[in-house]
Amino acid sequence: MLFRSPATVLYRSVSLAPGEEAVFYLVLTTGASPQAVETALGGLMRDPEAAAARARATMESDIRTFLARLPALSDPDPRVMKFYHLAALQLLYARWKVGKTFILDPWYATLGLDSGGLDCYVWDLAYARVAFSLLDPAGMRAMLVALLGAPLNEHYSIEPLHGTGVGPFYAYNPYSFTASVDEYLKATGDRSILHEKRKGKTLLEWLVVLAQFGERDRDPDHNHLIDYGNDRNLLEIKTTGTGTGYIHEVPSPNAERAYVFDTVAGILAEERDAARYAGLIKKFKRDALEVRQAVNNILWLKQAGWYGKGK
Image 1 (cartoon, rainbow, N blue to C red):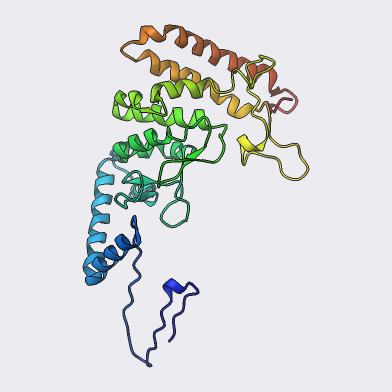
Image 2 (cartoon, helix red, strand yellow):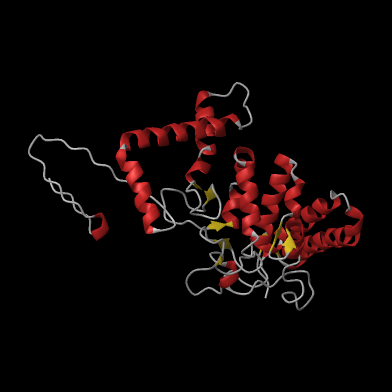
């Protein structure tokens, strides 16, 4: 039997006689230099079975720790409990623990260990925000702070080696980040995160910046709806074929801006020095109301019974 890999670095040929058996180990390591990788590889290969046993024990310990943090269900059907546990443990597929190779340990990627995407997108973090805040609040805190380095008014994600921003601004960044921070605050009560500073601003100040995105330059007719432009900022939300696409003044994410304004106003109101934000809180509450009115009055399609894009 002959095993071949097209990649030279992985090439190995082995000949087995009929009925003969052999054990193979595939070892993947990471390191800051070729020497570090070689050292790590040597350590693993001295006793690969023991290394595999340690990894398995660590994984089982992580699973027990994660499940212990879940809210308990009262007298659930065993099938519901199995689904509940499996759903929660999906977060482990996104977790990478590779020491100092990445800017954070653990690092949570948008795509898991079974895929090739290692960047962290704030949109995808928001999808997991409830489980994340319960199962690994410390890890979530670190990822939220790291995402500010993009910064999120310019990019939709960060990469793991340096925390550098990747891609264009995404129209859902303000909603995704605000919802994630709000969930973290509710689950942990840790308001110190709001005063972590990146790129010259605290997280709280970044929430205000994201809430006001586009007010000055993307609402030329002052109708309280943001013109998000073309597919560059709306990404996958588009019409196929020869359609004009889901672009410019669109119901979503314009409607989500009302949630963002209300939520950030609420976060500001809970600050110890909330009085200094009184004017901004009042403005954001008014903005939320005006956005809801604009979405309903301008973008509601009476004949269709649904919302449609403007311009």
